Each structure stands twice: as C-alpha cells, then as structure tokens.
Image 1: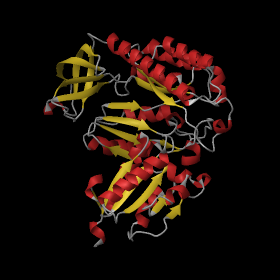
Image 2: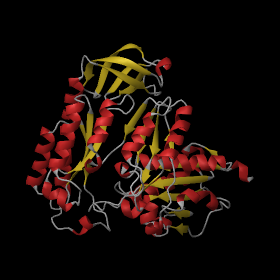
Image 3: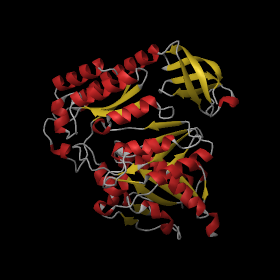
Image 4: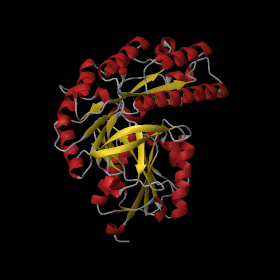
Length: 438
C-alpha cells in the first residue's frame, strides 16, 4: 500500500490531558500524510492512549484491542500513554499489540509506522520515567465550542495513592509565550472557550521565573478568547491573587475544581496531601466571599486504607457543611508501587461502595441547591453543537448546565439567558433566552 494512504483511528482512555495529547498525535500523523478515520472504519493503524488511574486498565486495553482487530484483523496496533509506561510488558502480551510506547516515545509514534506489518512480538519502548524531561505541547478540539489546552505535565507530589508521577514523570511546563500562541491558533478556529489542563495545573512554571498567575494574566489578553476555565487546581496552589484575578476577570470563568480527597485530617496526612481541611475551608470561603455565584467542584476518595467509619463521617459532615457545588467521587482502588498499597486497614469493597453511594447522593443535593440559588438570575451560556431529540445544551460561565430547543443558529454562540426552573430528573436548568451577547 502506498505510504500516503494509510488510515489511522484513535481511542482514548482516561483524562482530559490524554484527550488533548491524542488530538495532537492525530494532527501529527495527519500532517505526515495519514488519513484519520472512525474507530469502526477498520483502520490500517489503531492508536490506543491508555490511563493508569481508572480501574481494570488492562481489561479495558484488551477490550479495545479486540474491538480494533474485529474491525480489521490485520490492523497495526500501537498502545501509548500512562499504562504503557507503567506496565509495558503486560501490554505487550495482549494478542494483536504491535508496539508499546511509554511517556517519552508516544510523541515519536510516526517513526514506528513506516512498516505496519503485524509483529510476532510487540516492540516495547518505555524508557525510565526519570529521563522523561521533554515537554510536548498539546490541545484538543472536539466539539467546536471548547478546547482542552495542556499547560503542564508530570507531578512532583507523591501522594500515597497515586501512580501519576511514575507514569508521567517530573513536573514541567510550556512557556507562557508558547501557550499564548497555541491559544491564538485555537481562537482562530472559532473556538470560544479554552480549558487549561495539566497533571498539576497550578504548578505551572515551577523551576522557571513564570507562574500560573502570570499565565492567566497573559491569556486574558488573547484577542477573541471569550472564556478561560481552569480544569483543576490544588488547594495549596490556589493563591489569594489567583482567586482575586478570577473575581474581577471578564474572561476567566467563576468555576474552580479543587481536589480535596478527604475531609479527615488524619487521612489527608496519611495520603501525603500538602494541606489540611483548615486551608481547604479558607480557600472555599475566600472564593465565596468574592464570588457568591462561583461554582466549586471537589474531588474526594472513599475507602482509602485506614479510613474508619468515623473518618468517613468526618468527610461527609465536612462536605455537607461546606459551600460547594458538586463532588467527583472516586472509590479507592489499590495501585501497585504506591505507598497506600502496603498500608494496613483495608476497607472492604461493599463498604467502599456504600460510602461512594452516600457521597453521590450528597453531590446531587449540593448541585441541586447550587442550581436553585440561581433561579431568576441571568447568565451568559455557551451553546454546544449536539442535537439531542431537538434539545441542545450549554453551560453558564459558572458551570450550570442548561437546555433549550435546538436551534442551529445558537451553536457556539454565547447568549444571555434567565434561569427559570430546574429539571430535577436530568439535573439541568431550564432557561429563557434573553438576547445574543456576541
């Protein structure tokens, strides 16, 4: 087959950062003359970008490989990403895998696709994570309305439950000048919202004379960029000056996602988090004092080793009283090569599931209360392209999901709306369109 006509399909497991990196690898291969096709199109090459955080990473990876080979039994299968860095030899044993590329090599994938005949034995190139020092810029453009822009990679925090530093290496960042250039490229394609992502986003610029606050200030100046959203930021890195900047900004939206992980100081110390609940509370109070309408999302882990019933109740009560808007609940799962793996006091699985359920219900209550506070108020909404049975959705700047009748004219437009009621079943706000804003 002529090299120019190779087709490639992608599958991404895991986080927004993985999605932005898959997008960038996709652009790289398209520029090299390959044609990107849908997963079910039976591509010549399949690239699977893996995650080490989700459960059953190996099973998920096997399933995707099997599906790919069902669409084309002769497809050349490349596995990249975090799980490929942590468990390359296990992945290499999955029937049908031809090449396994770790953290450093995944951006050199092109070099492995000159000969795409099936291999008897997979090529494995994972390298030592300590040697992964290069930074690769990435951004994803999925649905035309928002783009996930990677600003930072790796992490120097060694939380006891996490394999990310082992999978992605040391904290490193792009320069502000480069990120501004990418933001301009994204805006030139008609995109209105950029979500800043990283493994430890607030750690941007660490080891250089640039920092996350300066990055936000620079991005605010990008012409035509309507919205900047911070995907997630550690409480100890969320400074007063960042909160104050967001409070007076017309571009950075009033929405913070701040990992907590536990409302028990005992557990936070065991997790090797870099703060206690007192600091976390002070961040929430500071945000709400300056921006009462601000949306605050929280990551929390249940069933961590040594989390006794009382510790969980401490977490539940802490979150119940905190002025936050929703939770992302993670059930603790064992990860080999982490400190927590060796800890005593394992919580049985049914107890973990019960705790998770309690927090999911609490999250729904919190979200509903937050949505209800805004009935009768007006907010700008960025409408998305999806048409779901003649209904379309969008998000206010403070992350309330709203719906209206589908109108192609609204797609990718920011429109002022009044929140009129909450549809409890779908947990989405109904609204009245007021006028076109832009």
